[in-house]
Length: 126
Image (cartoon, rainbow, N blue to C red; front, side, top):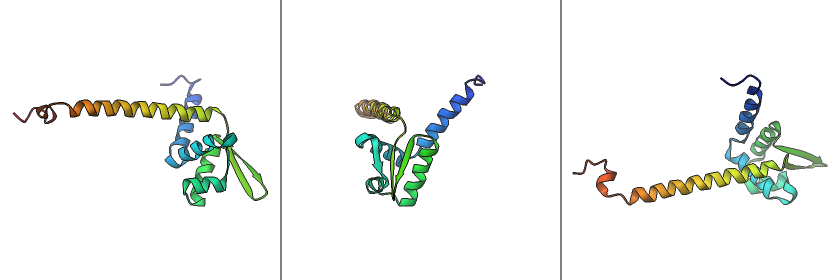
């Protein structure tokens, strides 16, 4: 059981990760993180993600709901930006973690492939 004083913070964190839990939203955030001043127009995001406008709009709404991005409307154009510079750091840390995990998995696979055939068959080849 979580301490009652800390439960709301954990819930907020969990909801943040739920908001990030879609490949398209991660792609949108990475595009914004790489954009000049971490800002991009909807037209740019549409072109780069290949999403339909309605789907992009839904993903952006989810990111806004979780306060990960903000938007500014100027005439007919809407521009999005990361709500906090820490979002870029979060994405970079996640990428490093995943690359390290994949490297470990590749090393385990390499070692497994070097085992004699009878080890791979569970010793049943004798």
